[in-house]
View 1 (cartoon, rainbow, N blue to C red):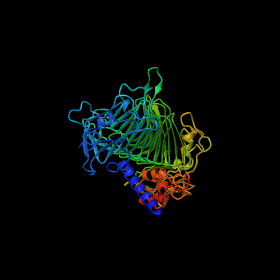
View 2: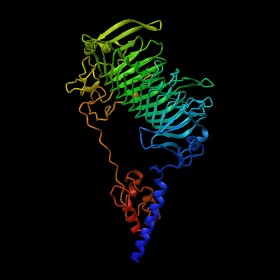
View 3: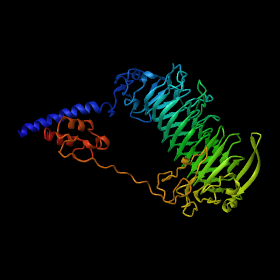
Length: 564
């Protein structure tokens, strides 16, 4: 009887391994591939377009590439996408590189874009490709057939390298356009040497840009790292514009114009770096833009509230260094307001330039003129027929230290909303000229910040915009008296949260706890075979050694039929 059971167990184990490894491991370890594109003939289709056209919602179309990241397999020709290529709720369609794959312009291409979206498309992911050598965009989500009422939505662009597009540098030739796109994730995407960066336009909203970079954009007028525009009205005159955009852990640098230029409302920048761009680090052209835990340096201006329309911004625990003005207001007849908290402003010219009638609120900041004999830190200037007029008042570092700053500028004198706790002093960076902007041990910025701010808000700057971070730009924990600026001196990394381990089944081998060791438990092991015991595969690790392997199959097989 025992011998018979052993034979049965070995048979079940063998069948399980054969079934599950053949189905799941698939080609080159891509266990989720349902459609294979292989230009050498080893897959379901030869071209990416064929694979897309024949796919169904929920499919993962894997495009075989080379194993050498420096020598990708090239697939030539632009790709057409329309509503028929969409996934559905719970059945996202994914176009994914299996290996190193480069999508490039074909010799006979009639379009200058890599991806042309003729109608709205939804629940679609593009993952893992290099896109290069097209004359215009990497993707164009802005065909005339799209409308405000029929947006593309739930789009993910992940693990992409997009470069050397727009060789002729036509004005407005972006890396890509997202017009009327909703619920978009751009993650781990590098853009470089294109005419300009990604443009978010129309009624786009709920857009997240994370762990990405945009650098060396060439165009000297439109060469922004990331851009949001296309403000307008629909057919019945209703205002539409981009809004609700979050940018995290993203770097923009060495661009021909601005780092970020966003004509959009409700934009949040967290832990971003914008540096060495020709013009502005961040151009605020909309309401309720929020800059937190960010470094902005080496640009002509750090943050410009451009007043293209009513505009407002919060700058919190950030460090701004520039040759001209770290914070400036433009000469437009619109409302412009800013609140600044726990931040450092350094310039050899002026740290702040505010125009007549506009407002600045804040507390616990450092303003420093870095020139050899410079003591001027701010100008308050009049508006003169749509231009910047004469200086109404000049402010010096001693004015800030004596409180004169808060009494003269156009502050709301309510509670903590004056800037009486700020300093006009050298913030003592490790190396200002080399842009090592961490604090020295003797910096007065250490423990000089505030953990909360009693801001009652305005019509343009709601109280809810205040977000005092608990970590710094590198993820180090801030203490109860946070430092001023983007870095926390001597901060320790945020602790890793260890997930609660899955409870072991009461019956050895009963992985789904249904009271019987049966085929369903073998399915659990087989579906995770060869993988680490994490996430959904944690319960498949029957013997608890951290890996789902042959020993787990043996354990389940050895108890097969027990219970019940």
